Image 1 (cartoon, rainbow, N blue to C red):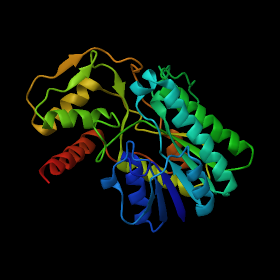
Image 2: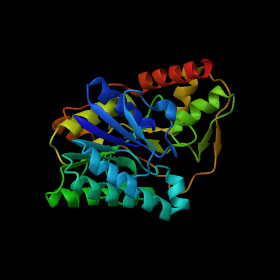
Image 3: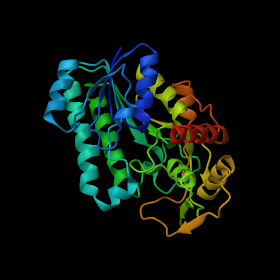
Image 4: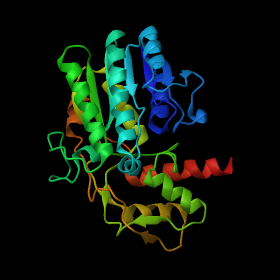
Length: 308
């Protein structure tokens, strides 16, 4: 299968590229390297440094005619979306429209979108949230993801493309950038390795559903090769508050200094966890790595990275 992975030099996208190559697929990576990193790129994939909003990208997509697309290219920083909602919408919404238009011209068989479970649902009424939960985003980032999902659904209902949106919980693991992608696990590990006290926003009681990138990759490959449509949650269904997360990381890293707290950040949700029940039914998927084991593996990766 010929697969285009946009944002394939980024954290999740690069892991998906590696998984596709292991399965014997032909992979074309498109990334503008605004967040992605060249060292994440597999030599087995073809790479083009392009912005998905550009006409050059659209032309090359039509020429390449992939069988499937995994769309990870995005503005993914919630706080940046609060500060600059126009930029967020331009990348996440107009980038999606460009991609869908070119995909329909190229007669792409399948388009998978990396969406966000936590950001789309907003402050939840049910825990964990099913896909039927009301979508009330509390940030521009969540709104742009929800809008992009609506465009995928439109193209699906028009019979133009087969589309699916995977609503990821908080993904963590090796290669997450503690600066560019704002993942709290990577940020805390980097701070502890540097001898700095991790700064917990607010009281630290805000909760998240943490899912390991290896589990996410399995879900992506299953969805790309399947026929299901619509939105599907990819998470664990479990809540972990940030205080607990920081304590777990401190334990695995032998970090004994006091953890400090700072002011709460605008646009952050209080609680988040998503129900993976539909993923089990439609994708034969369930998370395999529990948080404690996943954090140990992730800490080991960053320690090795520092020593290399």
